[in-house]
Image (tube, rainbow, N blue to C red; front, side):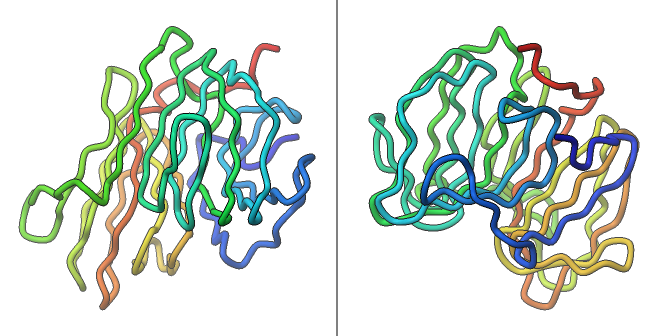
Length: 224
């Protein structure tokens, strides 16, 4: 399957208005944002777990990164409430599910294949750092390949967004306008390399998840 695979173009998906599509596992539905490959794919997806749904134990050969948007995600490593950021590197394994139900934003097969670093961050227990008059930043992960943060933008601000090596933005709260397009909760914007732009923040401000620099090399399907 190929979905939004031209990484030289700006892509926007307003996922809250998209239908849920059933996964191969009962009780687990998806809204796909981009995808290269079949059921094993380089993919960016919003996934919904119904209460008491779960996957069978499995290995993430290409790694898995996710942010919990709603509810509580669970596996044998713990309970992860909304606001949790998790990186399970290549060759890691777990048994994911949720007794109360949850929604997560997840990225598969987007790791350096040599990465073996686990990250589990509860952003509810961390403080944002002011970075200029209109922006606060909460760092999540950074290495030579990518930089991942949460940012809070002040109401009505104009935010210059630089993406020399590409960027992705997911709206967590509030909203903004970009290229005369309105972005609300769970809207997703992907900018190509060199895709600099300016964000006009809405009257209620915005809290966003941002990944930068990871599109320096053109993505491809998993070699499986």
